[in-house]
Image (tube, one colour):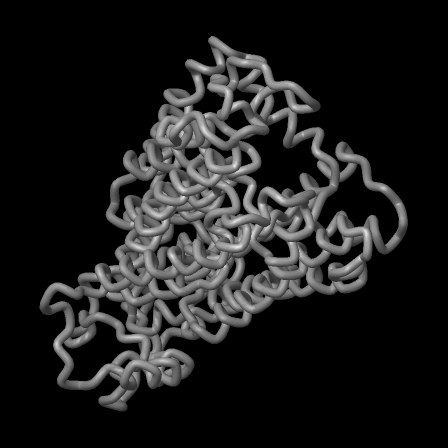
Length: 508
């Protein structure tokens, strides 16, 4: 039988370690960047006083960055969406939203999933909750007048609703780790969020997923399940979070909480989907049929392989390859969950499984980076690593539009195939780099920035500080990180330092 090893519960923290973690005290890049606004946080600064609390500051920054992203779309808003195709690519301001206003029947008052569309796609190819979001934005869009004006108004209506989602996303991330609210700045200032938030409707599902993680961190599995079910009703990927949660709950023996979360997720998903499923089954199935039958497309490793080898990979084969790779990733995740010297944090495994899905999927639209941003900020809150990854994603964002400009223009201005393939490789390497850093933190918990103050799993809810009931491999043996002379079951501290300037460990 494996030994039972107790991790550090929040109430076990020594005196003096319950203060808010200040990034400029812990992170060299954050400290250097803070020189733009007056330098690192001082000893005499008052934290959490006045109106500008960390959460409010982060919400305002998120709204400001979202507004800058809207400004970045200005050339398209003014004319590029409506004058050919190349201009919206050369200005890197493309958005699905205005084009689908007419293309999916919203301009004509068609009801999603119930009314048949013309063309190759007979019904709206989005999940039900996203379709409802699109319909609500259509209700807010004035009718009549010039079609271009109506499309602009539809984009603005969506942008207003999506801005609320962006603010909710940033607030949820900043509140998930109670002592690390400033990690929410990683989300609020992420350039990929500003650039991609209004391309499509993904940020709705991302915000719901972040809210679900916040509820789990507060020990509310039913609320977590309901929000995760709603997120899955808006986009498929959030359901993946139930796998790492299953593994961690199995290691900690938290079966009742996991069952509550699963029932909540299934119930919420059914409440949204069942009416459409029963009343308009053909329209409801369109999303799943489209996902299954979609060809290998932009940004995926399968497109890279296809272009390099000159061999077309049919959809069914790409689906099989992706499924096999996801199965391998799931097995690797299970090995990490049960053999790591300390139980991995929930968001660490959540990031890894979603990253595996992103890397193996047969399409990588530029807005898919939103799926990973909040999980990355919680799993590896280090500015250096986050910015390296974000730089790769910004290059890919520019690369795909320049490649589309090259393929759609008669004069071949833009990025040729080789350049676009380099952008794909950079995106893949950037995501893999962040995965490697997260895996390293799991295998060597003393390197995990979140655990350097002695915390266990601030986003883990009922898992935080819980005893292990099933472990294997290295985890079944005495922890190699335990201090000499410590008996089994005693608390293990990480990242202690005698430096009074860095009470939670020296900056990395």
